[in-house]
Structure formats: C-alpha cells, structure tokens
Length: 497
Ligand code: ADP
Ligand code: ZN
Ligand code: MG
Image (cartoon, rainbow, N blue to C red; front, side):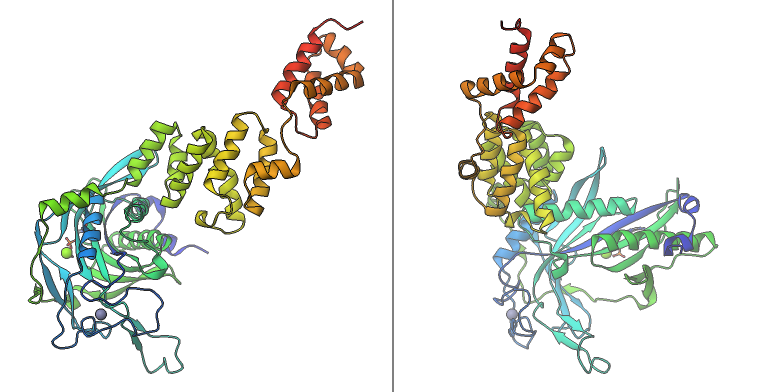
C-alpha cells in the first residue's frame, strides 16, 4: 500500500521544491509552583485540585509573577544564545475556550523576555545555525477531556490543574529546510533544555509541545511560499511524519495549479495526514493588550550576570570537551552526551578508570546493552559508576583479562556488588605471578611435544594453540599476554636435554 506521502506526489516531483519550516515550541518550566500563584505544578493530581482563585481567574484575584519561573526562563533564553531584555512586558491574549477560565492567556507579546538567539544543529558531519526569533513567557491553559466518560457522547469535562503552569514559547526563524532538520533541531532543543534544568521535556506529560509552520517553494525561488501551521505534533516521530506529509500535500496542490491556503491544520497520527482546522478568515483575533495587573518585568544587570554565572555546560560544549579532553570519537561523544545522567555517569567512570576511552566503550557497550535488555534507565543502573571505573582500572592494571571482566561485569550487574568482592568470592583473580605462570607453561610444553616440534620447525602459528591450552589450564585466569611471551621465550630456546 502506498504511504499517504506517496499518494500525494512522487519523490522526483517533491525534489523540485524546497521546504521552509519554522517551529513554535512550548516548553514547560521546571518550577514547583505555577507562574502567577502558589499552586503546585505536580502532574497527575486529582482533577481540579491544584487550583486557586488566581489560576481559576476568579474576579478580584491578582497574579504575582514567580521569580523562580523568570529565572528558569532566563536560563532557557541564555541557552538559546538570546539577548535577555532588561525590560519585558506581559499582555493579555484573549480567546474563549472552556479550558481557559480567565478568558485570556497571559503572555508576552511585542516585548518578550528573550530574542535574537540561535541554536547550532548537527546534520551528519555538518552543522547549521538556526535563528531563534524569540522566547517569551506565558501561562498554560487547562485540559478539556472529550473521551473516556460514560456520558462523553454528550459532555466534555475540563481539568484546570494545568492552568497557570509556566511555559516559554520558543519561536524559530524560518531557517529549517527539511523534516530531518526540524527533527534535529527539536532533538538539540530538548537536550539543551534538559541540561540547563529548564525542563524535563517529557512529551508524554505535555512538557514539550511543538507546532510547525511549513511552506514550499520551487528550488531557486527567492520568495517564501504561503505557510500552513500544523498542530498536534506530540512526538518527534509525528513531527517528522506530519512535515513530510504536509510538504507533499503542498507540492501536490501547487503541481495541480492550485494555491496553498494560509491555514491551521491538525495532524492525525492514525491516518498520517494533516487536516484543515481553520482558515485565515476564521483566524483568531486575540485583541492583545498590556496586562494591567502586572508591572513590567525588569531584569537588572546583576541578576542577569548572576544567572549567567550559574549556567551549566550545554550539550554542544560538553561534546567538544569530551572529544578534546578524553580523546573520544565524535560519535561516542554524541552518545555519551545524549542525556545529562549519561554524561555524568560516564565522567564518573572515566575519572576512576584512568582510561576514558575504555570507560566510554564499557558505558556505551556493556552497560547500555545490559540496561536496554532490562528496559532500565541509566539512573536505575545496578552498577555504580565508581564500580565500573574500578573494573576498567583492574583491566588496565592487568589484574583481570578483558574476558574475565565481561564475566565479572555480568555479576556486578545482577548483584550490584563491586568487582573486588566478586573476584574474591569467585576466585577470578588473574594469575600474573610468574612462578604460577611458569608452572603452567612447563606443563603445556610437556603435554604437547608435537606442537613444540612443529613450532621449532618453523610453524610458528601453533603458538596460538599453545596459548589456548595454557589459558584453559588456568581456567581463563592467566594473563594471556604474559603467557604468550613466556611460551615464545621457551620455544625459542634450544631444546632442553
Ligand atoms: P504569523 O504572523 O503567522 O504568526 P510569524 O512571521 O510570526 O507568522 O512566524 C510564525 C512562525 O512561522 C515562525 O516560526 C516563522 O519562522 C515561521 N514562518 C514564517 N513565515 C514562514 C514561511 N513562509 N514558511 C514557513 N515558515 C514560516
Ligand atoms: Zn493557583
Ligand atoms: Mg507571529
């Protein structure tokens, strides 16, 4: 069956056009309380329990701006390389909807907190700079629930717990040129917001929401085409699929001699299509006006400098530091900075191990593999980073072989114990004591006279066999490098009388 995209236009026709995309991303700020009142922002509370006269918009209740929310929004703006305005202002954005009891959203309009920023995204080998138009603060609305009740065919319900949750809305310049670039941008943005503790960005909890503006133009054309705004993109995968669909749809409209309508469209994940929701004639007139209950937000230079000084390292900075100071490959540094917990874990292992590259291999290979097999997160790892570092150090010191380390690691993972305890318990210590090794070597040479003769006749490849025999005799505990050296030495000496 052809996909919805293939039904619209064949790839060679789509390739004649260049997509232009700008994103509007809502990020929930990681505050304990709401933006204009003291209600908790906790997720999953009983409906309509985290509310008060302010967030319910009851007459006479006055908003008080949360300092914590402003500070987190500032961090978000700084992460996006934005200029933080010394003065920004809140406005009322008026519209009527059951999940908005005030009848307006409090948002920043023409004087946003942060503007003129940019984000570097990496596209394979290349990087590209995406402009950030602005990042402004606003409060969230509640949630209408149209399904799941016995009388849902007649009624909708509303949960106002989310009303007043602090958000920043991040608006990009129309700099993205494909669904892959949009995907890469959102990935980078999410990582950045997590690293600077602006938000956990859990999409399932609605902490990261994205709308996409899309247009297409013939390649080489100067003018942008008319854009459509696509909403309801609640996963990274849906964003990419919705964009690919919408690009193909606009191409097919233009190819048929039609015109793209400026409109808002909804993505339907069940069909993979976007559908018209409201056209320009029905566009909202929000009648913005300054919020009379809030004074302008002033950010002093000293406050900004203080927040700036407390900014943690951003993912891109961390990636280059990992490459430079640990000698990691680009790919490894990307994997190891994909989340704050992973990079913290790795750095702990690296510090204890004394061998960052081997530490990286163990974290990315054995540890992540074992975690994945048990559907565990790195924060739930039964192996402490210090313990893994110690294991790597033991390999480095030649106390255990790589093969034994794998065995020990499996036991560490299932018990949570440290390597030395397991080595002790299981008698797994590598034999590197020369006396013990000499004994093994002598035994092997005595037991395999045929191979010894072959070696002395010039068939030096049998050395591998003899090493294997020695390892077997030692139950895998001999140091294979030393064994090889000692065997070679013995074999090169003239036969003993
Ligand atoms: P509006 O006036 O409809 O709100 P804006 O100019 O404020 O439009 O832009 C809103 C978003 O749409 C931004 O992310 C911007 O990058 C993007 N955008 C603007 N023009 C286009 C276009 N022609 N094609 C795709 N995206 C666009
Ligand atoms: Zn409240
Ligand atoms: Mg606009």
